[in-house]
Length: 365
Image (tube, rainbow, N blue to C red):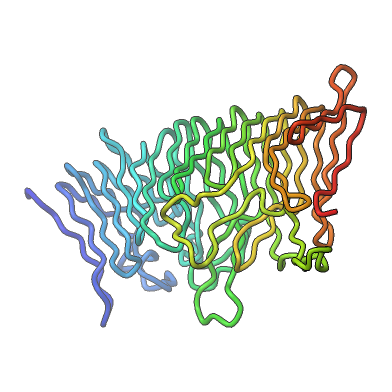
């Protein structure tokens, strides 16, 4: 036949459908009544759909899969897709073009989220107003899997992600992130009082090799970047200063997202820091007002530029040394620059500068 359709019908729900040029189906001993069958996969050994292209449409999951060949092995718990022009995948507002796709699932509980493995390049487009990511691509491979058994309906497990080779992400505010490789853990989060499913948010990330970050919030270059997120409210502002104006920690907003009334799709005009160093460790505070820096540590060949406000004046600042540490404690910013054997600590501020083995700055004083 020129076209073959294999349809799975569920009462009162849209039908899932394989459409292809050639369809091979192997059933699991359908006449044997002694085999326990709890779902449709228990009747199958494998399905192989081949075409130009072959497609799988699953409206109940708002998902599509298009490739030259799609294989479902119900015994091994494997879905594999490949094609000369790669594989196309869509789930909701997320679409991807991949070199190939392997999805491993639990045959005893196929509703649990399985492991995704892509060997080779991929490009992902995101059309979701709730996400700050617009586009993602890589060259060598992608893996994503839950730490323990969980379902999309009751998401209660962390999810690990590994991306290798030419990682490049574009954000909705026009920013970009690049690196040789990135690995991270996403955790489920539900807004308090909201009657909705949990969504995955970053918990910790490790980015290595030629890391470049160019966003509306920060410009940074390093060889290794370690990020940890904490969910907590912003620290209380310091008591009113001598002029009667509420003191605000000036380093806390080194990295910040637009506030609720600002657009997520357009860059926000603000002074942003420039950070350079061999290794960067950062702890980010996340809450309803956005994301801000709680702790920052830079080690090796440190160069950082920003603007600091003190005494009612905002002046350019530059920090160089072997190590820079920023701690935000109870609303008070403390920044410490430490020199090395051949690299003294230096703090340039306005028209002057300070040099020494270690310099400590409290801009809020």
